[in-house]
Image (cartoon, rainbow, N blue to C red):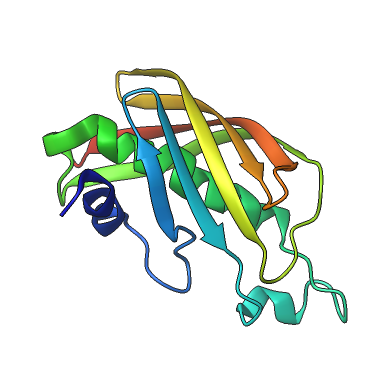
Length: 146
């Protein structure tokens, strides 16, 4: 099992709320991963009628799962266990282009800082044409249950 597949196995999500298909790269400063928004996902049934678009909150969640949580799991290494708690604390997002059903996106995250359990990253999502669809600054806390 490679480090990338180990991280995927440790993600605290499952379908239908897992928005990571693969991790392409991870090190102490960055992570890159992908996800394809399949057309049969439930939220497309009502957002928007006859012209489905991926909701911004789902784009934000995808960026957090790849760009914050996956990187946090890597940074914790062997200290990540069943008692680890991950909490999303803030996001400042800009939405630049719509993401439609069946689009594959790539999320790239650069660590700003990680100390005292707080991780902050600059995160960018691009479409298959390499265009930025959204970007922002995200932060979260990673700690163990008391």
